[in-house]
Structure formats: structure tokens, C-alpha cells
Image 1 (spheres, helix red, strand yellow):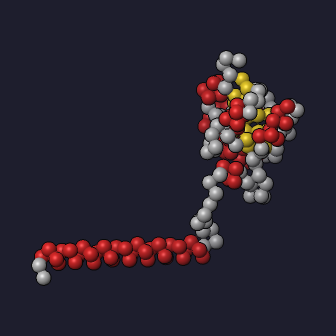
Image 2 (cartoon, rainbow, N blue to C red):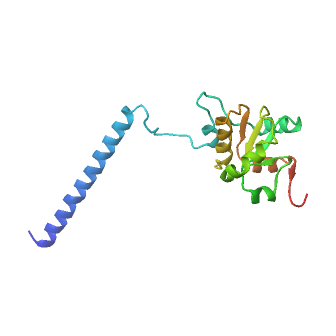
Length: 169
């Protein structure tokens, strides 16, 4: 047997062993995941609306139509979870800016002007935006019971020509 054929055989054996180890690790990991009560699901929903379910099974998500009715009836306070700069570029008419990333700086000032018994609808922009979700959970943790999230709120609101405030208006 020549040196090059032994090297080729050694490479082939090493490759087979590596593949075997990887397959065994995957099988073991899968087995452990299946028997654990808190195992990671193999198939999950990546939809933001599906993530907006409380431990009690209630959904925090509110459909645009319902939010628009509450807006028209002046029955909800809209909280914009985006940055002040994004808020200044445009927001839902009458919305209050409570930016999630600066909630510690804004919360006390903003909350003093709001009725704790009011319906709050948080929103941000983009289907994958979690700022409004995080803000809603924060409010719920503080004892606010009437909190909903308008997923992709700013985009949906504009697309449906609902009332907004922009620098040009």
C-alpha cells in the first residue's frame, strides 16, 4: 500500500467516524429533548401574534379593526413603544410615546397623566417588532389589566388611512 492510498484511507476513516459521532450526538440530543418536560419544540410558530399569549391563555393581540373602533370611540390610550425620533416622524393621532428602550426615563412622567383603569394599546412598527409586546408585558406586570398589542401597528394604521400625526400635518 502506498503512502497516498494510506492517507486517503485515513481521511475516509476519519470522515466516517466524524459523521458517526455527529449522528450519535443528534440522536442523543433528540432523545433527551423528547423526554424533558421543558424540551424545545421541533416546530414552532414564529408569528408575533402567536407569541402574544399570556400564561393564562389570553391573547394580548388586538385586530386592527377592533383597535380602530376603540380609537373612534375614544375608548383606548395608544402607547407608541418606538423611539422618540420615530415617534416624531409620525404616530397614531393622540398616541403617547412611551419608548420601550427608555421606559425607565419616561414611565413615571407618562403614567402620571394616564388613567390606570383605561384600555391601553401598545404598538411599534414591523411584524417582527417586539417593543410593543415587551411594553405590554411590562404594564401587565405592574398591574395594568387592560392592555393589548397592535402587531405591526404603525404600518397597518397608515396602510388603512387611519388618523395619524406627521411633521407635515
